[in-house]
Length: 306
Image: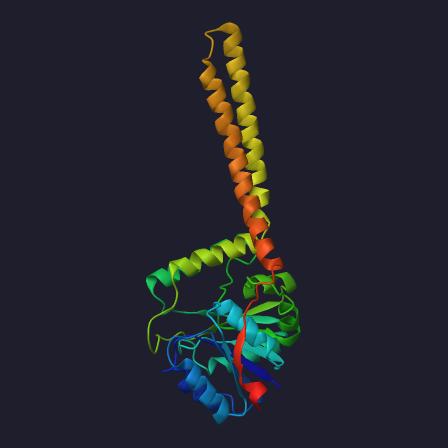
């Protein structure tokens, strides 16, 4: 199998059929499969997906029991993909299917493990663009990502890297974070970005904050490294302050007792609360990862019905 096209599906009953048809025509010269993962859509996407799996022998449809999020849906698709290359593409037609051939060409020419796309002009909303810039800025520091590399959802991953990515079994997958743990052999290619065909974007600031916390506490040790010098600095400040109050007590006028006690409690309490909050995030994430909470639960799989 040359290629697996993985499409996370959410509330796209009006577009997913046309997208699959366009893929069939565009990729007719290569052997490929399409893996549709329905992330508990609230419209008729599940029905349409089942019909597509029946109509096309190279389409596999998987439906999840509840909404787990885009990254979890993509991880599900990667686990069921058999292609030498896996391409992730959204279900809203903002990425033209014919651009997939460009990704394959760049991957083969440069022998890249991963190929990310970038856009000359993005058609996202202002809030979406701001969120994307924020995520890219954060990942540049937390994941040691090149600053000029745009982490688009439309990308290609080589099979060998996919096999390493799916070894992650925790409930908080972040595909790009896993990729940067595995390889630095990454290429880029400019592609066209179109306006959304139907509906509205599912992007929200709540999802952005959730993604930020997942990156921060699941894929980086930076918080511990950052708060260590902060803690030491606060201890040093507290020590110097107490020295100053001691000298004032010796040479006069005497500092008030409540000043010493209050300053001491504020400094120590602040350090304890900060360190405990960071430690609590790590322990909480580790607990959830070890608690057996699944990345996803499959409700329906067309392959199992064949």
